[in-house]
Length: 254
Image 1 (cartoon, one colour):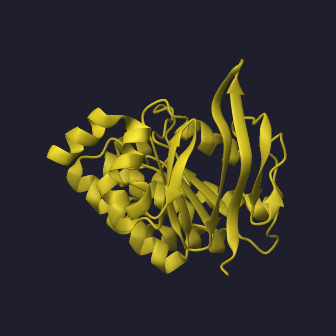
Image 2 (cartoon, one colour; image 1 turned 90 degrees about the horizontal axis):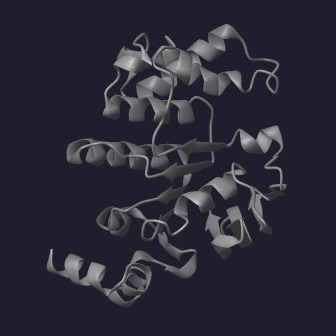
Image 3 (cartoon, helix red, strand yellow; image 1 turned 30 degrees about the horizontal axis):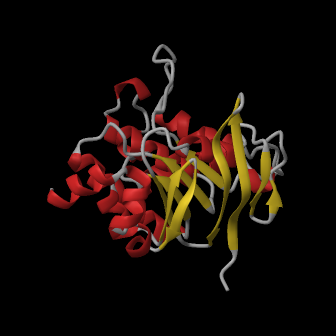
């Protein structure tokens, strides 16, 4: 049996009195890729933010690498540093003159208190190695404000690479890219997944991509309506339950 990287048990998140996410349970085994799908407003981003401890949960438990995520979102540093998160939109103040190399280096700087042997030379080499893996070493001195959408996605992946991670969580990470950029992003992501042994949890609206690449699918609409392999979870009946019959008819004729 494979190691369980993430286990979610009966997780519930409420806003005032409304349950945005209700009694959600699932687990991720090492090296697998799981997609969360569902209509707008289904609670997908809320679920991810609760797993990360960004948003408080009202009930249920989250275990990451066997450690319980406490209600205040705290994890031991050696567990936290093995998780990387790519949001849908990376927002930053464009008045801050930060270079690509400086941003990626922040992923290393978080470890300076945990790794007493770390020094400037090791940091610089780790940053350059990470940028080289995503074919962005030539961008290292460029300001973030001058990057294209596709270049920024590569740099964010480099941030995930500067220290070995085990769990990568993506909230529609290729959002904002054109079709070619999205294809290139996923090609790079899955190449790195094989090389790094990442376990991936991702929110996606691209059901064709999910069918091609993911091992498991969670169909969410506040609660999990179904979960399983793409062939099972994305059946017409399950998609109709999650999105409505009009959605299924439209995609069947496309």
